[in-house]
Image (cartoon, rainbow, N blue to C red; front, side, top):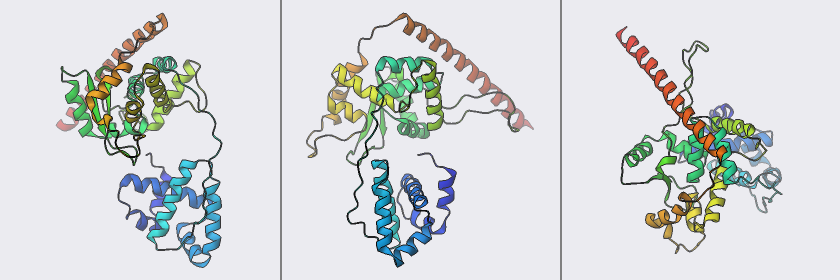
Length: 343
């Protein structure tokens, strides 16, 4: 997850750093620290003061804590925040009774529906490398967090490259960390033509900015992806609150249902656990079965309009221009490096 400067500063607090160092994973440390910071900010207190108040007035602190968490607008966030608070308090062996805590289910706004054709329209209005990356998310069912995982992993990228070079395969299997606690294995299958060139980086621009000769060439962040998504949505008149890159997962799931992909395969592709709570349903462990089901999506018949053809031609021209520009920029960087080495 992205780390804010405030969270990093919060982690430097001695009381926080001792607790955070006891957490097993880096991702867990950052996530819990972020939510503990939000909680303490909401209560207008500090880590040390919070612990001190628990010692002197546990009942009053409990009431304030339950009131704050119980009224939090996001149920999912409130649960993570509760776990972070419990972990922090437990580490310092403090007693904070939270009996009767009920995290309410707030009334949520209905999320916008993104149809597959509208998703394609947004993709057509995007620029490279974001267009091909959004298309990858649409056809895989992945989200931005999984994209970041692939983008940061040389091991995953090497496995992808090996499969792309295998002429006998029409798709790529990408093994990822399980998204949910009720899944042990998670991987997605994606047709080769929808896999972008990894790592996905921002465009390299010429010019001197703040003393630097070049800018760009960094791994794309969630913010960069969301910004480019919003721009594309505005270009085709589809921009609205709640319609973001995550909506591509919804379009994927809805289209799977429309073309007859089994619920088990569609849910597994999105990283969701089996609906069989007893663990007997294991058909998603059979890659051949997944291919047969997802082929219903991969081979779907779509009506190709003149608008779609023109968009495809534009995409191809943009992609060729991007490859040429990136190649020229890399050549310049290589030449500068060689000059610096000789000096």
